[in-house]
Length: 253
Image (cartoon, rainbow, N blue to C red; front, side):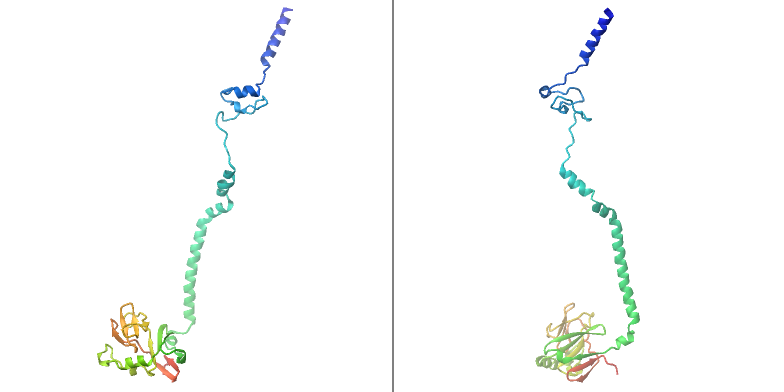
C-alpha cells in the first residue's frame, strides 16, 4: 500500500515537472535577454508560441532589396551580356579576317581589270577631243589625260599681251608664246610642275599664270617658268585643232 502511494506521488510530481506554461507576449517584451544562448526573443510569436529559431543565432537576417534582384544581379546575368562577353574574341577575329579579305579582293579586282583592259601602249597613245566653246574666257579648265592633269586656259586679251611681250632671251627655258600656243586664245599644257611633279594653282603667283605652292615655282600666262626651282616650262602636249572650237590632244600621226 505504501509502495502504491509512493508511485502515485512520483507520477504527480513528474506531471508537474513536465507541464510547461508558455510565456505570454507581455513577458516576452519585458525580457531583455534571450531565453537561451542560441534562441533570440525576437523569434517568439506574439501569441505566446515559440517560433522557429534562427540557424545563425544572434546574426541579423539578410535584407534582400528589390533593386538588387532586378537591377545589378539581373543585368550581370542577362543572356545577351553573357553572350557578348563570351563571343568578343571570335567577333574580333571575324572582323579582322573580313578586313583582310576585302583588302586582298580590292587588289585582285584591280589586277583583273588591268589584265583585261587595254595595253599600256594603247593607253599611252590615247587621245581626247575637247570642245573649247565650253570653257569661258579667263577660266582654266582641268581634264585628265593619260593619268595626268591637263590644263586648257581660255586667255583674255590682257593675258595674251603679257605673254607675247615677255623678253624670251631672259627666260630660263626660252620659248616664245607662238611656239607654245597654236591658237593664241587657248593655252594647252600639262598641270605637272617640272620640279617635283606637283600640281600648280591657276591664276596665282607673281605673274598670275600658275603657282606651285609646294616649292614656290611661278609661271606666266603662257606656263613658262619665271621664278622658283622648276627648271623647265610646263609641258605642252601634242595637239591639233579640228576647227576654231575643237581640239584633239595626243593624236598620233
